[in-house]
Length: 182
Image 1 (cartoon, rainbow, N blue to C red):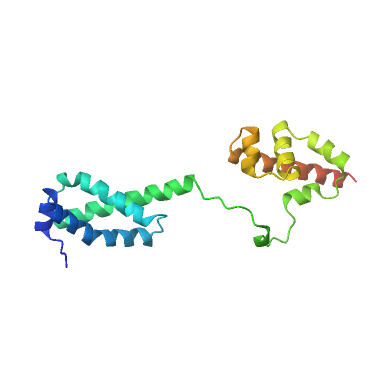
Image 2: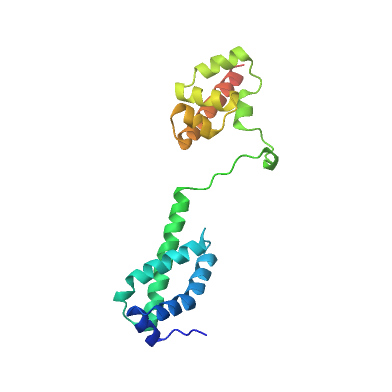
């Protein structure tokens, strides 16, 4: 069984490959457990990144075993924070599955377009700005995905989502005002 002590750490700092292996063998499972416990997306990959960084910086280590553990886990924590921030900036998108949609209220599309005939729909769409009208017609009438619509219009997926949302809200508002006026 490998054991981590100040002599092994000193040998690892000096570049001894057996000592470096011992450092990895002893600390990697602990780092992996830490990353898994905190919900890292790829804990094995992050563990490898941690030890690549640690091995490159090991020459300047002070503090023996305690210093090594502190250093390894501070690198692991920094990698975990980076992972969380990256995922927050680039969330995973999942395709819409109508079978999983248990909403009881009609969607904004349905509510905005309900009870509207073709000519009236063209008139309402004509009141939207060009970008909103393009997104609504491509997404709702053309039945295209957000990504397909973004490619066609030369916009980002996020911009298409916002234009669709604002366009549908504008249509809903127009329909509501007409209902009040009746």
